[in-house]
Amino acid sequence: MVYGAGFPAADDVDAHELTHAVTQSSANLLYYKQSGALNESFSDIFGETVDLTNSGGTDTAAVRWLIGEDIPGIGAIRNMMNPPAYGNPGKVSDPQFQCSAVIDRGGVHTNSGVPNHAYALMVDGGTYNAFTIMGIGLTKAGKIQYRALAQYLVSGSKFLDDYLALQQSCADLIGIAGISTSDCTEMKKALDAVEMSKMPCT
Ligand SMILES: [Ca+2]
Ligand SMILES: [Ca+2]
Ligand SMILES: [Zn+2]
View 1 (cartoon, rainbow, N blue to C red):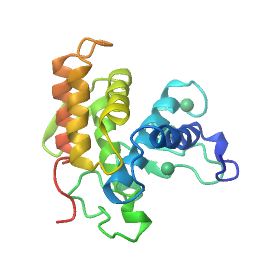
View 2 (view 1 turned 60 degrees about the vertical axis):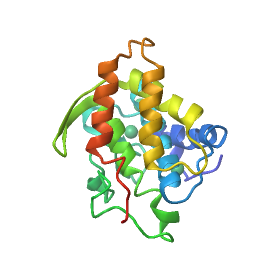
View 3 (view 1 turned 135 degrees about the vertical axis):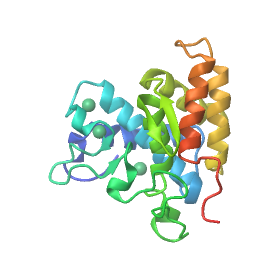
View 4 (view 1 turned 90 degrees about the horizontal axis):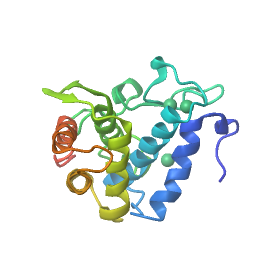
């Protein structure tokens, strides 16, 4: 695995890159447009989940949901709870949504902001886009995300497929790790808040 000099100091980036291997060996999401943005987002989701739970690196409240805060000389490059802070969309209808098919392979590092934001909202809760979500925590949300990636998504999956896969995964996991129907309701609110079921770029 080869990436930026000094980047191994950033635990979220390390887990981000390793998650690309998990994705390649499971859903194998095509690295282009919506499927590519999902591929990038799963790497941020599990990258930050590892960061928040490994007790290594910088873990202050101020850097929660930042990607890359420990990259030497560069610092954070994305904010999952506030994607527009780094020029990425927080919901499908945001002006930052990249509709070009040629820039950044169809916006894989930009449009990942939408599912990233959904994850931050389902974990911590919050009020956004007229939805108020009660957070379900990292353990439950992480298990639901992993099941969607490993069991339901395929190479050409889009945001709508992820929207449906996450709900099916949550339903499958009721009774495991304390996951309940009300957790699935809160998770769906997070997905609806970021407009995951809305067709982008129309
Ligand atoms: Ca950490
Ligand atoms: Ca981080
Ligand atoms: Zn990546």
